[in-house]
Length: 510
Picture 1 (cartoon, rainbow, N blue to C red):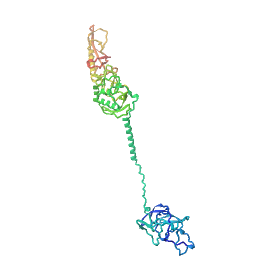
Picture 2 (spheres, rainbow, N blue to C red):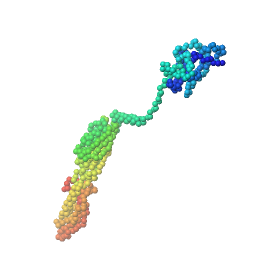
Picture 3 (cartoon, one colour):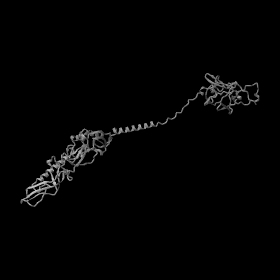
Picture 4 (cartoon, rainbow, N blue to C red):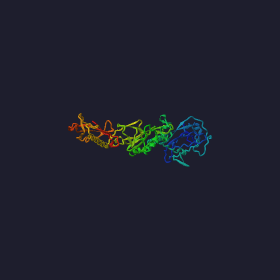
């Protein structure tokens, strides 16, 4: 049984399908596929979007399958048949290959078909499902036609919006981490936190002083300070200006002698050892030891100065002076003079500074290395300093002269046993005292340098060798002539704690 002839005026039903969208190029028959745009089956009465067809030859067109026509209907006099009698519903599957779009017919279950008389065909609607399909009977290649700017292929207009390329979304790569910038940010954050903490501790945090750092108001009578570092600065500044009264008023001074601390005496210290380059960093409110830096003469001093709070919360120095005990191995009568001030006791209070220790005597003094330098207030306990005196050059000369004068007096004695003299001659025979003549055969002081007595450093002494000769007459008128006596080793000494040579009292020992 043959197939009914193709009716060019027949209405073609076009089922829904997925249409591959293409970037349209009117000069390129094989346009690039952009995306598949699914379409849905419109409701009867709505327009069906036009399905663009690829340019094909008439024998490549696909027509819907038709049922075999019964013999009674194969009358040549009836070439046209009803659409409802010959069209079988179908669905179309689309395959996309590299060269063309192929439409495959897939038979489906027959459904009721509306008669042609009930199908409304809107005029001029190429996308309607009931619009008669125009057939191209030309055997040549179908080329696109343009109607009002809409490309047409195979006689059907293509919707322009289906062939507009979508906006390409370019995925941006995540930029690499800037470690240098991150490190800078971290450091800046830490610095801000540290500065904030420092500002809080320095200016905002005011804790109550602990009980062990509180003292009574009787500790000092000086000005009050709310900040300990300011107190230490004021103390060092007062020292540098020689204001001893202000310096001592900023803290306790102890109970020992403070008579040495005078403006005149401390001025001598500043002449040779000025206090300069004072630097006291800011300290926390609860600090009990304040860092301080300054120069005392040519010496750099880096120290900690202790501070306490009184019952009112004001800061004071734990002590503003240092207690010093000066012990001399010499006789207690030997004076000790600090910067021109004679000490009335060996224990005194001193301010930081340089003190020259002298005796104030012409024949005995303290050497230069006995000078005392108090660099800071770090001394908690009593500091003891032993002083070693020495005989001066003036004292040596004075001792030799005094010993020589004393020896001459001994030689002039009209007795064989002068008191307190090294020249002695014992006899049981009576003699005439007026006839006694003493003489010295050598110079005992030429090789006898004076020195301090090791048993009493306040005394100068010399060890000498004496060679005497003597002559005298007995009472019976006889004489022994000039008699040379044995050499005598003698020691001559005198206390040097005097102001003049005529005050030296020579003592002989044999």
